[in-house]
Length: 312
Image (cartoon, rainbow, N blue to C red):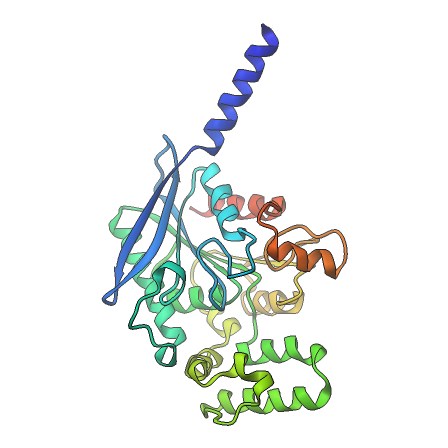
């Protein structure tokens, strides 16, 4: 009987720890409906919320893309809600459930994403959340930094975010993967876009990356330096990187920290770009991008919760 009672108590406590209220929202932004999910623990009410901003490409509010399902941002949200912190996740305009028939990739700019985050900050403020945090993952870190230039927030968290502008980061990613002649071709395209000039004749092997319809976005994206933006932040800042990140290396987090000496810098041993723990080689690292069952790195959740609780 005592064993049964203990099991029931453990079950009750576990259920309570994970219980959350999840609301699916359509938030009007610039005449569009952004698909969003608001999550908070039950029955605890909180005045603290974290807006989670996904990374580049067609990454959805769970941190997934077609063929790359890892649930990184979903697990991050669950960890925060389990600790009494509400979250707002959203599909960026034109992506996943925020797609719309009139969407034209050729007219999209990174400033559009930042403006949408500002609208979500307003939404949270109108919903009476007093302590609003931005958590930007990868490119989402830059988008969050841009939004924070125009809004008062309680704190900012960069997860695997670059310190250099995107053109520099892309070159760093491509250089070791391409033969020298091919890299020189890519470098020329990137440099043209950096100068604000579109490239009409993109070699077929680079078309997906530099297709004409995405070049306007890349021109807008390349203009911004995350390290310059973070230096102007007047709220508490947490910078998190992972030693097994094969997309945004440790030097990028160090660059952000150098630009913002007051920030907390946490380099998490064996954490990769999708926020999972990798103890082995590159094969294990790549496999984690398509493993939705692999849990979130525990140190990451602890550090983010600690930062929010200490600064709210």
